[in-house]
Amino acid sequence: MNPLQLVELLKGHKNYIQTHNYPDPDAVASAYGLQYFLRCHGVDAQICYDGKVEKLSTKKMFEVFEIDVLTADSIQDMTAEDYIVAVDSQKYNANLTDLIGDEVACIDHHPTFFECTYQYGDIRKTGACSTLIAEYFYKTHTPLHPSVAAALAYGIKMDTADFIRGVTELDLDMFAYVYKQADVDKLRTMYHDVLELDDLKAYGAAIDNIYINDGVGFAWIPLDCPDALIAIISDFILSLNVVDVSIVYAVRKDGIKFSVRSERKDLDAGKMVAVVLKNCGNGGGHHGMAGGFIPKENLDRVDGMHARIEEAFMSQIRLMKRGNQ
Image 1: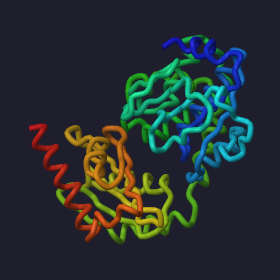
Image 2 (image 1 turned 135 degrees about the horizontal axis):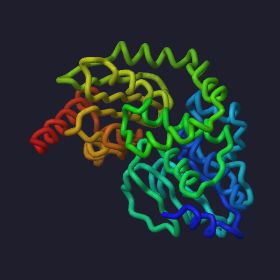
Image 3 (image 1 turned 90 degrees about the vertical axis):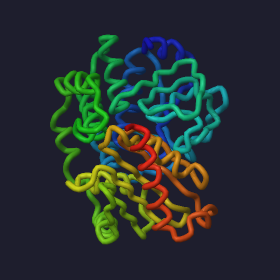
């Protein structure tokens, strides 16, 4: 897609850039970068989301990069005629609230689970959505502000786990492109003070409840733990030298939230969690990283919860291994 086509589409409209409901650094950097790109071409857009910010690193981005973001409940004047560009998510996904505006465009790096037609759609497999936004500047020779370049660099680094998860050649090329123009002091600042004291309780609970079965690390957290932290702990479990698949879940008031990671080429985390949870919840994601959820009204379907969850995932893993032999 030609990003200037997006500019033409949005001209003359009131525009919003909507991230997924629990924006992480990649989502925020993508929205911030796109907002600046559009502004350079004479189009205004406001960044918004519905949900809550759970990661301390995301909260810090708003402060360090001085990003103005609207919550959905603070937008009183959005109409059905207003245009929405979804970034780092796609329409009909469980993590993107369907606001009253018209989702005319989508820029995302995740697999598509619900087919949807956009007037402008840029959905490509990369390690980070920030990579796609960085390419917009590169392809159109649009000048990059050092602060925007730093945010995009941070988004790429975070979503690729420092270039070891889902990274593509385009991620590497675009990181090199934005880093050369980045405010390195701001980028450096983002690596300090990003862990909260309460996070340690969740780490401790996961460590106390870890169980390893044939290279699969299971850990459950008996706390009302936010999605972002569950994902971070799943990455932590995956770093163990005896684990190549991590399945971490938190038992919360509203149900059970899962975060799944895979380092194996024959075990697609997104497909795995989608199949395991299809009859009691929902899930999906990338080959290497995915998430899922079982709502509280369906918990009666997982009696003997921990043993049932382990067996469901291990059965699917065995099927996937056999299917790749």
